Structures are given as structure tokens and as C-alpha cells.
Image (cartoon, rainbow, N blue to C red):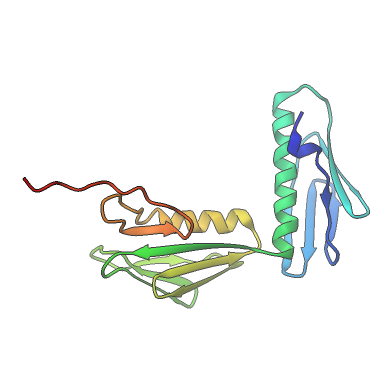
Length: 178
């Protein structure tokens, strides 16, 4: 039994949820998200509530999908109403970031500048060394932020590199003078 799958999702006012076959679309004030949900899990929309029921009980993969589908639908409903934000902080002497057009330009201490294309549906701002990624799709926001962070992960001695705004870097002690 899935604890997350058993919970009902409340649809806020101003949000439309439509199910056609395996395709679920959620439309809200910030935009529209669509996703396919194949499988033996029934998605029931009753007025202002969304519930999930598995086809047969006892199947482990079906129970796993039950909670996964519930999480995806909940993230879609929250995304079209509130949106998601992730913040990165770039630390290091000479490290720079700026947004120009549809790309994020980074100077990360390499011999060449790094350009990252910004996917559609995301808004990226770079002020000094703070990068903010805003979007309605939680998966897209998280994946883009993680791929940018992977270009220069924070190192434990001086803390140089990208880190999330709420991330704490465990620092190591350097060499001691004799």
C-alpha cells in the first residue's frame, strides 16, 4: 500500500484538470502541463479532488507506480499555481555568470567560456554570482539546476564552485605548516 498514493489531491480554484485516455493536462494561472500516465492505475477526478486506485493490489511495481503517479500529479498542480524556484551561488575568484538571450554564459576558470542553452519554459536570472531558475515544471527546474551545478561542483577546501543556496559545504582542513 502506498501512503502517498492513498492521499487525495485538492484542486485549487482557477485550476483545470482534464484526463483523456492516458494523457493528463493541468491548466492553471502560470501555464499548462501535460503528461502521459500509462499503466493499471486509475486516476479519478471528482469535483475538486483527484484520487488514485491501483488495478490489482499486492503487486510491488504497481504500488511503486501508485505513489509515483500521485507525486507527479501533485507536482503538476503545485507548479501551475505557484511555480518552482531553485537558486545557485557561484563562489570563487574570477568566476562569473550572465544571461544573454537564450543562453547562460559562465566563466568557471577553464581556458574557454562555457555556454549553456536555457530550455523553454524556464526563466533564468543571474545577478552577480547568484543564479535563479524559475519554472512550472519541477522536474525541468531541478534537472537544469543540477546540470549547471555539475559543471563546477563545490570543492571542500576553499568552497569554490556552484552550490545550492540552502546547501552546506563541509569544509576540510588544509595542510598544516610544520
